[in-house]
Amino acid sequence: MVRYSTRTLAATLLISSSLAYANEDEWEKWDDDTTSPFIVSGFAQAKYGRFLTSQPHTNTSAKDITLRLEAQYDTNVFQTQIKADSQYQMLTSDWHHQIRELVVNVDFANIDNEAVANSPLGNLSLKIGRQSLSWGLGEYIFLNDLFAKDWQSFFNGNDISYLKKPNDAIKLSYFFEQSSLDVVYQHKHNVDNLYQPFMQNVEPRRSSINARYYFSRLQTDYAFYASDGFANTPQFINGKLEYAALQSVGASLVKPVAGGLIKAEFSHYWLNNSGDHSSKQQRYLLGFEREIRPRLNLSLQAYIERDSQNFKLNNRQLVTSGLTYNSADNNWTTQMTLFHSPNHHDNYVRLSTSYRYSDNLIISGNLNNLTGQNDTFFGQLATIDNAALRITVYF
Image (cartoon, rainbow, N blue to C red; front, side, top):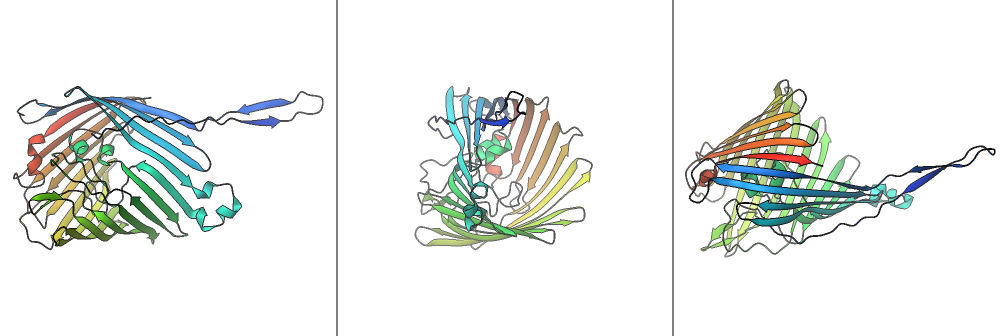
């Protein structure tokens, strides 16, 4: 986990008072309506995990205690939010600190100024700072979502929200009458945290930009995407690891069909490495999801890659199926997702469950099982099969 220096978010409390007038023969009365724009919350979490296969050093995959603090400060003009984690890892007797979110959001529509509200600025929203970013339709499959992911967290028993790696970025959102535009700029492109990280990796030092234009027509949601940046995982080029320059365009749609939702997504990549090593790739996703029984949802996905270079592990095909069950009181949620590649012959089973014992206590568990040849995507991670249990207390 990346270390960050401790930061302090300071905010002032605004107190407003309203005056109520009585008749001339009575005392004047004052009503104090005090509302603080400053909100503090968080949680404490204990996590324990075990590898499902024997390991050379320890069969314990995780033994952590995490403290999360969140603070939010709201005004009519802007909102400020911070999320900070401090984690003690018992396996290494080490503390790790991370600022997961430190962002200022300015919504010009809320500014109490008629000239601004009636100008093009009235449709603009800015989000500046460290933030989690995501778009696209795939469930654990990413075509146009080119923002960095934390695969270490995904496979080691953390909550699924930790899959989104924090990004230092500026996000501009502009709301037209019937459509919207998002543009994200990163001064330094952020890359994935791999479960088995490469040593002596040189990360990209240049900026990246991503854009999404989306709207709805006749019960169908459409989106178009474009990006100019870098690949999030490195490749071996001329005997060294390198992050390829990446430009992409894509599109997606979601439409209600047969009592459920059908989704389709497409992306086209242009990849360029040093030494004039260039390639192209197309990605296609088709999915369907619906409630097949009360509180039981089924999701299906078919995914195909088409590469311009015919290497052994190119042109990947993947099918997924998922079941999600929610109890009648919504206190218990269980999800199982199966991944299978028909041409690379590797597999992944992900099982997660969560029980809300009370408003302040949640007990969660998950299991990761991966199989396949050592050179396949899931097969190379087969040695880290694991199960984990988390107990989270919110405050």
